[in-house]
Length: 139
Image (cartoon, rainbow, N blue to C red; front, side):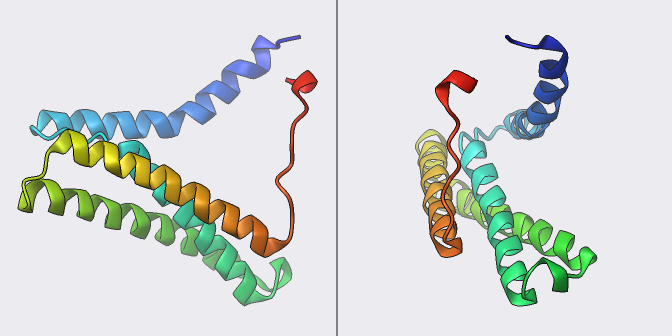
């Protein structure tokens, strides 16, 4: 049975990143620029953070040897760096090279989602684990 009491807090928590992205896109559109690549930029930022956390955990020799501050800062800085590079690429293509904003944004969304899925699958193979599956009867 569907439980509305647990659904509402989960929907709020999972909707906040989308709220940040849509707020940024609204401000971007007010400046006269249409960035349809926000989803791809956010996806690359997220997978960059996962890669940063994975590499730090591997370098530290597991969870026991990790510094708590660095365990937070390295993925955070990796997220910022991945998103920054995608944003700079979008700005270079649309402002300097005068590429079509619609086509560039959609291409960046497609690239970002594909890159994230590829890198996420590669990390799963590196760890030697499998992606957990959820039975359809449980949903």
